[in-house]
Image 1 (cartoon, rainbow, N blue to C red):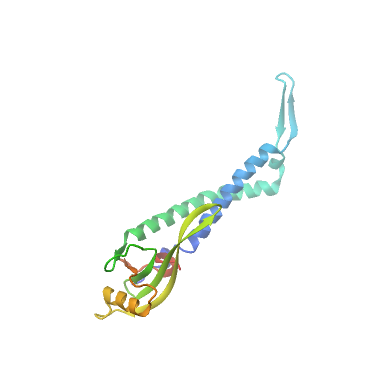
Image 2: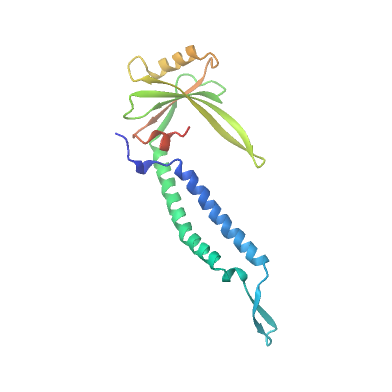
Length: 195
């Protein structure tokens, strides 16, 4: 049984986080800009030798409305991000990953075998770990590609699938191979595995 659409985390979570960060950045930049912009004199206090300024940005109706929208939206974004994180943690606690056969020394490339309740097949993906730089900071990434599906049967147990993959794909003489099993039938592409 497939769980409902309410369990779909991707691609929405990434977009939600991006929008949240953009709003936070807007607020921070706005505050810095307000501090640097001159204001118009609103009051002169001769007794205390002080001049009070009225910020120009406070008078702009458009900016005032944008600020109200942002003040309304930020807590909602935070709420939904926390909800998605809780969903992500729940899904992670119901997914197990185990090695098939002997694990080679180099595990930077290999295969992932997905076994999900309610699916009639074991879907196989090749994977390769990569390193890429963004703003001079190295990040690890993973490239995946669908290889093929094996129907569930006594002939297609984990070691047999790995042997068949080795026979068909000579580039990996002893590939790292892992079985990814989910306790529940979460939406595959939107929750378990984005590729």
